[in-house]
Image 1: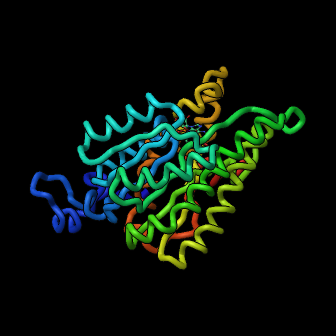
Image 2: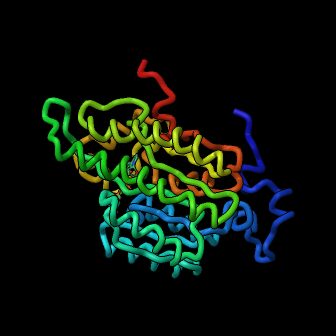
Length: 287
Ligand code: NAD
């Protein structure tokens, strides 16, 4: 294997770091490039897991964040963590994203609380084990409404706020490797995550006419409360890690940072795309 000394010592190329140093040895590239545009970002499901780490990653580069969650204490804690660790504007609201009328009222509030709304991450989500032969209407409806319909209904509110926010506005949906492949035990979840990729491409085409970008990430297994019941099954985590080329599951921050990139001007020519973040799990054959 060829070694790469620059990368081992410093993730930021030396010439770039020199050109953009803050004066306190931190490369300003973080705030200046990944934090651009400097408009506010709405993060649903920001009270836990990937949504929380996404809000923190955005606050780290100076972007105002509005956290929505059905869980008040989680949302409040995330906003407080953003302010404590990184300063800046971090607001929160209790919003059930499955309730379309509430969402319709809450988007203008989010824009007002942030001063501008130029980014949206749909991280609110639920899963539930139920194979096709046992599938109940309620689980199907809940899963599809939260994971899929809510993201669409929020996007339909965004054109005017994004126009007001100006160039560089962007959306990131969270799909899953289950949106690319299938698992027998989570039929409704697979439908919702495959659907997310479909609507992402459709909305990307409409939003491109306005200069806005829309993308998705497809995480593999991430160590969040959502996967806690699966991780409690004997041997589940170990088997998964063994099958994964990087030999582990990801942290939520490892999903949040690529989301931050996709929201930033660093990704200015990326739209209608999905990024798989799974430690190589879906890149290999089972042979
Ligand atoms: P999590 O359970 O830690 O966070 C999900 C958050 O969504 C919670 O705070 C929850 O309260 C909130 N939420 C649920 N229903 C809501 C509603 N109706 N309105 C508002 N908020 C609601 O889970 P996570 O792992 O961080 O999941 C975030 C997203 O990532 C989900 O879409 C999930 O499907 C996706 N994902 C997770 C994994 C994983 O392995 N954890 C893998 C692939 C994709």
